[in-house]
Length: 244
Image (cartoon, rainbow, N blue to C red):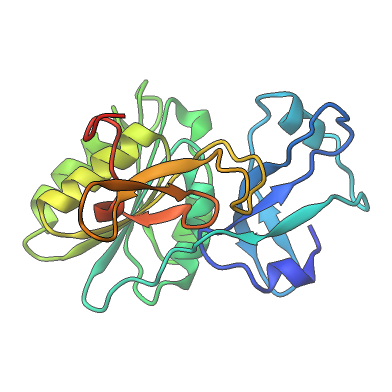
């Protein structure tokens, strides 16, 4: 999409809120991570899984869409001396391409999916200098299993030589697994969380996430659309850590 006012301002991990075209009963906008962006254009990567995304498949060159953005807190650059490690589950790699492009150091990316058709964008990441390691649950591409089944042996062999810093996007269980490994080893991990968003600008409070309270006592609510979607792993309180 050509949108110079938005595209030029996008930072890695931010998203746009899209009004679904030609679907009158879709009252709420939909959040989409920005996959690619330059000074004039931005690209979204999505899967045709429902009425909203199916309506998007009918868009043609020249059609106009309504966007709000860029929204959300972006990923930071990696810390000096750390080794960037990307971990993506499902279509989480869409939120990580700009992270990969803008890092000064090229690292290793782990992509996981249910089957080979769920593994996208490998060529794009390799073209900018990243090593990509793939896992699929059914073993149709790369290592059979979850993305952590490839990540764990890599960490075991490299953690004495490198100081990993994680940048991750994907299903909640995967994010919690990455966060756990980082916290256990006192590494930094940045995770992009996915929540249903109504307004996308922090007003409706439908996308809240538990985080550690700033005073160090208990927890508080954070809005994923504004305080997130990117959080440092040590901030997040998972549902099994506290009573609801």
